[in-house]
Structures are given as C-alpha cells and as structure tokens.
Amino acid sequence: MKRKLHLKEVKLLKSVMPSLNTEIWLIDKKYPTEWHLVHKNTGTLKRVPICEW
Image 1: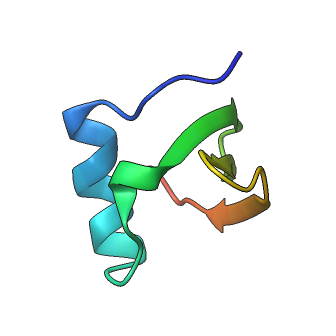
Image 2 (image 1 turned 30 degrees about the horizontal axis):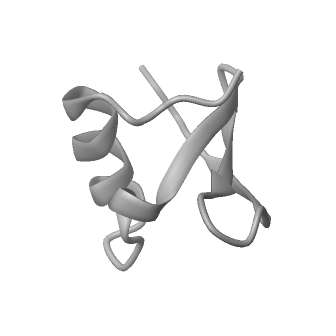
C-alpha cells in the first residue's frame, strides 16, 4: 500500500539523503534496513538504506 511520508519519516530521509525531494515520493514498503519508495509520477522504485537505532 503506497502512502505519503509522515513528518518523522521526512526528517529521517532528509538526514540520510539530503538531495531527495520527499514531496514526490511515496512509501511502498518499510523494512528495518531499507525503505522502498515509489515516484508519484513515473512509478520508478528507489531503495533507500535506513539504519534506525
């Protein structure tokens, strides 16, 4: 299920990937080690490594 990013998730993504525009990406899957993001317009998949301690 694709959904928008919450504020806490946006802050975490900005710390991991500062150049990523969080307004045009949706969360597809959340794993403990990485998130799968889907572009709103093109549907391309991006895997972002996340390290939540």
